[in-house]
Length: 239
Ligand SMILES: C[S@@+](CC[C@H](N)C(=O)[O-])C[C@H]1O[C@@H](n2cnc3c(N)ncnc32)[C@H](O)[C@@H]1O
Image (cartoon, rainbow, N blue to C red; front, side):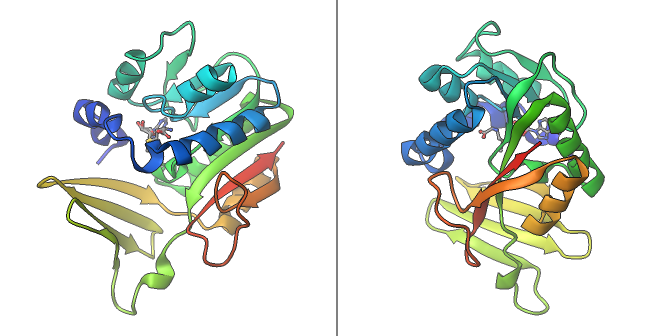
């Protein structure tokens, strides 16, 4: 299934309807604060900006000049119900290849979205595209889950990572191709998304191929140290 088919009209309509999870103030607040600090007074470019969950808050709360790249027309249309083109320009295209005008001190790609690129080559190109947009010394910041492979018993390919009355989340892994499918069961419906998972060490190598070095890695946006059991990481690379 193509990303354009997953992020369709229906997904775009439903995306902004929750105040929980990634939209919770205790998640979004520190995300915006940390990104504003890392932009260091310069312009920011969000790869895969979606409906503007982070980009709009960064522009409105912290006055950062934000531009977005986004593949999905419906997600951009949903963003446009909240902010106009003059305040937050968005270019429709693939974050691995699309060039937008101008230079930036910060490029960021959050909520596991580098894994939406399905091949290693596309993921490396995404790093190179971030580098193309940055001024020397600029930063590329990624938020990404750590693959949950240690939870896979021998011979099995699935992990239930959340199960409650409203929602069940299951990931199925193909360890040969480094692909996983997330299955989201809720309200009598199932949605699926496909990912290519990346270990932090592989990501560091992708960054080096594009001219970056790792500046910091934390377990979240508040600066919790990254450790063996961390489920996710926020990695900051510098050009
Ligand atoms: C999980 S949402 C994240 C949106 C937003 N960054 C956020 O944090 O709320 C993933 C987004 O990535 C977009 N996307 C997927 N592949 C893309 C690509 N190759 N280039 C640009 N956007 C892409 C999807 O259309 C979708 O809007």
